[in-house]
Length: 146
Image 1 (tube, rainbow, N blue to C red):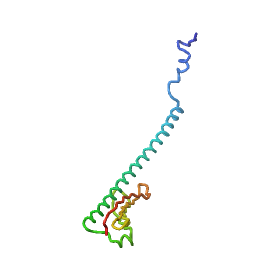
Image 2 (cartoon, rainbow, N blue to C red):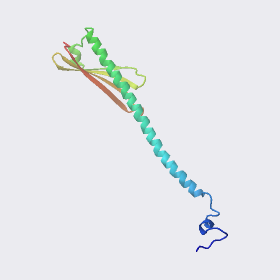
Image 3 (cartoon, helix red, strand yellow):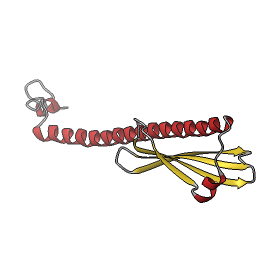
Image 4 (cartoon, rainbow, N blue to C red):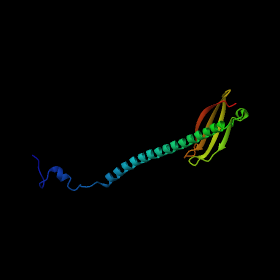
């Protein structure tokens, strides 16, 4: 048999004046939320940086694809790359303005694979959002260059 004080059970009597949260409990809950938010924000920042990097790589690969198409177009119009360029200066660097990329340069690397077969590599270099060097390249082989 339980003894009641004033018509209430002992557990109800203990909680009578304690209906809210103490300042310590609120501060502890706020600290836990702040720590969780810092982790979530870090993940969001990393996700944003990865998205920007992928977008820049896509733009660079498209610029390299366009450059290779320009070389193909020149060859289809009868313009050939002289052997002297391939042997003496295998690389030619051209600065290009690509709005989505910082300090972009476009570089062609010509490599004579065999008589009648030329490899052309288009290399796009730029600085990423943190100023670090980044690079993307595409290569193709073109026949009958001589």
